[in-house]
Image 1 (tube, rainbow, N blue to C red):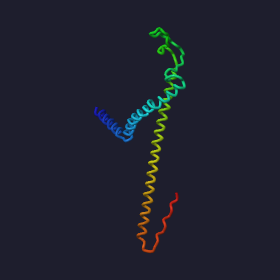
Image 2 (spheres, rainbow, N blue to C red; image 1 turned 90 degrees about the vertical axis):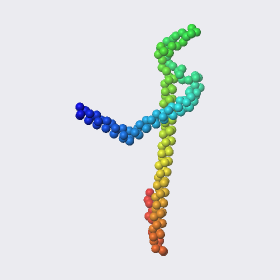
Image 3 (cartoon, rainbow, N blue to C red; image 1 turned 45 degrees about the vertical axis):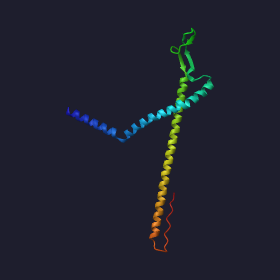
Image 4 (cartoon, rainbow, N blue to C red; image 1 turned 120 degrees about the vertical axis):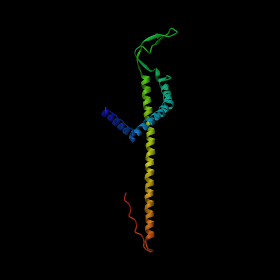
Length: 169
């Protein structure tokens, strides 16, 4: 019994160490931010881009949306309130091309939006790295100039300081 209790303590201690690791916390934050980011991408795709694409496709296909594009393999009919015979989609066997085309459009829009956002983030990251490199280079030049000025001040009057060797890049 004591051995089982010790094993449980070891398990919980190991679990606590696993959770406390930085990469697990980073992953949790990434998942939460990813969920929020998904809402932004979906809103952009569904509320801005998709209506425009649906309008263009409606002009091409001559329908209000893609939801009515079917290929019937087996058609079942039913009678509506007016006595007219209509297609019964519940009991018919059909290929729903409109839903498939909408799924492909959703995928392409989501991939495009993610690509554009990632590309923008990478460009900002590259600019940030270039700025850091320029700052480091400017600091190095300033330090070199400061050291050169200090050496010149330490030389007796009339003696010139030797020119600093040029860096090869």
